[in-house]
Length: 129
Image (cartoon, rainbow, N blue to C red):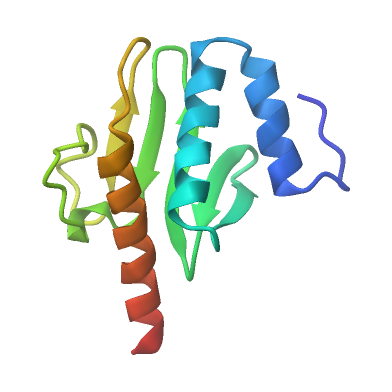
């Protein structure tokens, strides 16, 4: 991916989605849309040389793309309620939790929206201390 210093994180995420040009790009675009709708104040960032990241008073989650999975890693996922059991990866850690989305998986938009909102609220609560 050709990136210019002048490209914003949102432009870099747009480019990543176009570059993937397969189910992973579609999934990343869908996840991004859900995150942005769940938290209109979310800030898009481009970290660690190419990882789409969404933040609000701290990192909410990342959107990593691999050959067989789109991985949403929630920075403080272990502290979040997950009644819909979306978290299916990185379950052994004390802090992070992840959602691995495979080709053909259906994303539970309502449950993901709740997780994003809870992650933002947790970040905001930490800032107020």
